[in-house]
Image 1 (cartoon, helix red, strand yellow):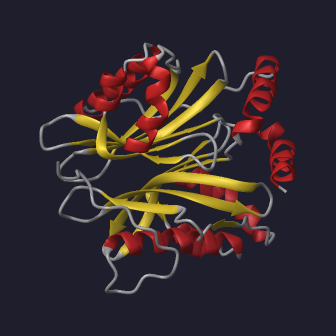
Image 2 (image 1 turned 135 degrees about the horizontal axis):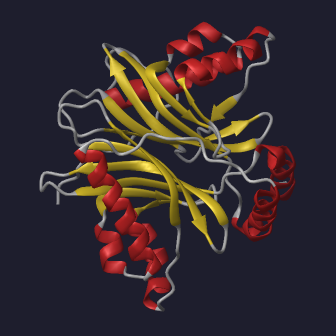
Image 3 (image 1 turned 90 degrees about the vertical axis):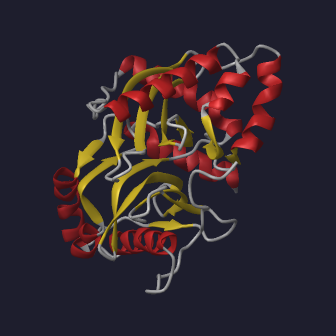
Length: 314
């Protein structure tokens, strides 16, 4: 079967005029991070699309462009930019061009090193205006290693029980395409809860990517299926119940790409978040091309938890 999307590439160096669109899009991410690191507010803002939505690590954090610029302005004015550097080793930035002749939308995932927090992760969508790529959606998180996940998620659940965090309002499904994409996500969670492997994996594109909560978990759908099948075969699915969800139809003539982020409830782990992309194929079906799962860490716990994650890695 032919791939529904262009092959993913990794690019962390400045793009030349002759480079493919994926490389130019990746270079735009690099430029955005570099501008933030040197507190260059103008250059940083120029890499943010007019319709930007930036999703922070805590589920309460959801900013449009104006609000995010307002948040950043005094920080940059003090020369206190933030440093998130994409990791070059192991191909830890991936950019995928959307299936439209315009070559004007791409989605990405990247692993970052933060001076303050250690390992971070970002997923999102970029759009091209002329020759300039800008970030339209960005979701930032801090992956929790598997060997610390049970303890830390228990702490997070206790914190949230005592200090409830209200999810930021998102973008409701208000187009037929977004409603169809939401239905696929609902079907995905339902299939996982009943350990229905056939239905579950049929909801992904053949070249989909699944990203787990540990930073090492970046799987092709075939790799993820090999991991999950033994659990499903024993009737051991997983239940993540959507609590809130935001969907964005990409600005493409094909109307065939939807970005989403969703807050989920799990009996085992408490709050989690899913982010990613759905694509409508030539057969008219919507399928998931990227799904990334994370455990959002409340801001009040972030510094301590990330320090413990760093210490455990040393």
